[in-house]
Structure formats: C-alpha cells, structure tokens
Length: 408
Ligand code: ZN
Image (cartoon, protein in one colour):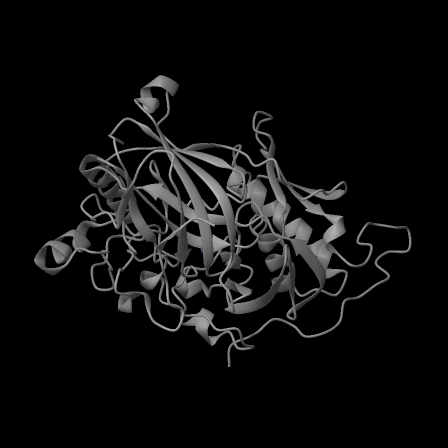
C-alpha cells in the first residue's frame, strides 16, 4: 500500500484540517507535495459535500446542502518536470471507502438547490443511503436491487492556467447573463465567501477566491467529469496547464450510471484512492489533445442482459419537436425507463435513483436521422433480485419495504 500523501478526518470539517484541500480551481494554489514520475501514493478524500450528509432516514440535509461548500478536493500534487503542454499520466490503482465508513448516499437535490436532470418531474429533496459490502452496494431505501460498484473519482484534473481561468470565466459569465435569475441556475459563477484555497492564505487567497472557478462544471482540464469508467485499472491522460501539473481530485463514487442524473447522483462516499503518476512531454501537441482522455479499465461488471429504453428529441410536456437534441432524447429515454420500473412498485424517485446509481449505460443511438436524435439508456436486468423483463402476464412482482428518506 503506497504512502498516504493527503489525509482527511471525517470527524472534522475540511476547513479544520492542518493540511487543507481546496474547493475552487485556481492556478496559484500551492502544491501539497511534489512527486517524481513513476511514483505512486495514496490520497484520502471527503465525500462530495464535505460531510454535510448523514447516514440516516431524513432528507433535510440533502434539501439544505450548501453547494458552494462542495467538492473539497485533495491536492494539488505536483509531478517534477511536468510543464504546460505535457500530458500527466495518472493510473487509478485502487479505490475504496475509508475504514469505519463503509456507506454512501445518493440525493435528489431540490429544484431550488440545483435540481437534477429530471428536476421538472422530481423537484423535491430525497435521499437513499447505501451499505457498501466488498464490491456490492445495497440500500434500505430502495429494495430489490444490489449492484457491483465500479468506484471512480467524480472529479480529477490539473490546475488551470491563468489564460484558461480567464477564458472560462468570460464565456460562463456571458451564458449567465442571458438569464441570471433562472432556477436552477445556468452557471455557478465564482463565489468567494465559502472558498477554501488550500495552503493559500491572506489577501492573496481572498483575491484568488473572487475569480477561482467553482468545481461543479467539467472544463478543458478535466474537473467534475463524473465518468463512471475512470475506475480502478483505468489510466487517465490529463492536459497540463501549470508548472508541475497540480493534480487534484475528489468526490469519490462507489457506483454511478451514465449521466449521474440525480445530480447528487452517484453513490457518494468518502474514501481513499491510490494513484501512480507519469509524464508524456509535449503530449498535448503529440496527440492533438485539448481535453482529458483515458484508457478504460480491464475490470467491468459482467452483465449479459440489459433492457434498453429508447428516447427521441420530442418534449414530453409540449410535444415540441427538437432538432437532433440529445439532451431531450436522453431525458425521454430515462423517463421511459422510470415509467417501466414504476410498474414493479418503485416510486418515480426510487427509479430515478436506480438509473443514477446503477451501472447503466447511456448511448447516442443516432444523431443524423433528422429531426430526431435517438438516445438509449441500458439497464442491466441482473441488478434486480426479481425478473423485470416483460411477459404476457405483465409485472407480477411488486417491491415492498421502506421508501426513500424524505424531508421533515
Ligand atoms: Zn459525486
């Protein structure tokens, strides 16, 4: 087991650590430690909201979660010799929950607090808690399902350059200005008040916090990509924008479906991740890369049977025809899967959470057949402890047991 280069303390707030992480992206955040190419090390991480959510049966903490205090990232870590234009090669060696903390949660955020992909249909806060046992997750709040997790970091990237910081702030401010009071908002703009800037202190930290990126969006450097396949055994190639790279990560997920659709959307956990690092000099130009890319892991759940739901780019409320809009098509595919699962006794919110947390596969079937895009969501039938496949008799089994945690 490699040496632990960053420790968290789940009994304390991230702001109280002696060596602090950061919840904003900025080029000037100092390195926690610098490694040599070829080194490996262990990093501990808080969960996605820095410990604001408890393992209980009340969703008030999801309703009240402060999203400006989320994504406490562990790092940044330097790699000797990495320079702008290089690729940082990061091997995901291992991931797991911390000792004594083998649980995770999924939340549907209230519409007023960021919502989720289907917030118009499910606008209220809900929570499910998950027991993590070896490679499997199950929940007292969602009966009848059990998944093998393909754990991964929701968030991983290198520090942005000054030019990239300014460019993204400009384009996001322009989008925000088109509808500044929208609920949920179009953009999460810089917000200094709750910024934690790692080992930066004093006026320099305050000035940097006013322009630092929030962590919600993925960008050219990676960040909050929420790709379930960045799992144990994967190798990630990250564009380097500052000297020594500045690798940071966090928001560990035990399991997640493509799209992470409930937004607090995976089985969120605090945990550890073991990493190996290397550098490809001038890799961005050598391979024509401006965004991260990765080699997938040889380890994947072995599902042989899926129900695959289709969706097309027609709005479910207005019947409006959209032109090759994959977001609308994927929404319709997910809604179709949810309606199907409701016939087996699940609430809409429970089915929404199954799609968000189980290893479902989201695909674009076609994006050329005007005017409809066709998107699919593939649900493995083997995650259910009963037969969910269609038969002439119709659904014969109804799940029973506790429902999701609600607000009080
Ligand atoms: Zn997450």
